[in-house]
Image (tube, rainbow, N blue to C red; front, side):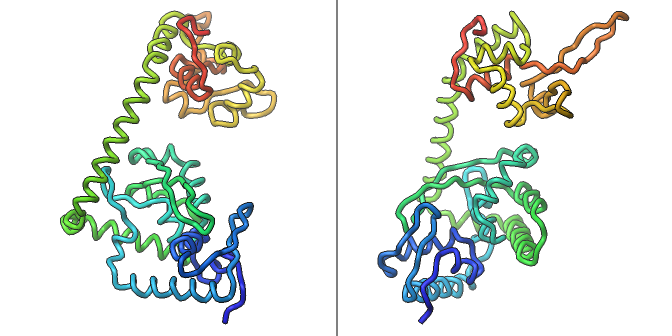
Length: 312
């Protein structure tokens, strides 16, 4: 009989993610009985009997699924098409799910060169009851790019190979997978699409009045220096500078240098650098970053601040 252990120790022993063990405990709780959980560390404590039962259940699942189509385990179907998820990647590369999500968020600008990255909050069962977690959905090119950002190991190389093969098989016989969608799955996909559309419409309606105000500010005033923008957004100047710096809006090359706008924010039209005319009549871009009306309205939304038509 195995000795008592924790969910984290069992995950390492079986070579699976900790999230997989917690989900299995929630799924098989009726067979395992009451499992002690340390909510502060999110760790389950298993008796010897529970450890043996859970190990056997996971082992049987692995054997039963060995003959299943591997493509279906690595790919999901949404209204956006065939995708994989942050959870699938975490399990396949034996990383904590939160680590994979952090990597996705840290490189979301690069990933979205190949399409929008969708994030959804979903419920799941654990030993401590129902919890919620955020899942990211990635298409083939996004997933491939993300995997190149991970340090190679035997596990990651093996997972990369399986994922690439899964997408390749799907591309060569897409009709087989489309035919496997049940009416319920198709209905669910349509419902999800409708819910996203309604949410988008609601967001547009919410932002439209502020967008009109921003347009009027643009005509009347143009961009604002950081200090003026802080006043409009009802922020203390130092805190506002700190926020913009920490969230990737502005930076400076060294402590005494002037603040500059990150290129992605400038390209997006959220920031600009002041243009002046020199004595020869030529335009000169000076190193003075300014918040555009578009940037102002985005920041107002982030701070949940309403600005009036005077930009106040």
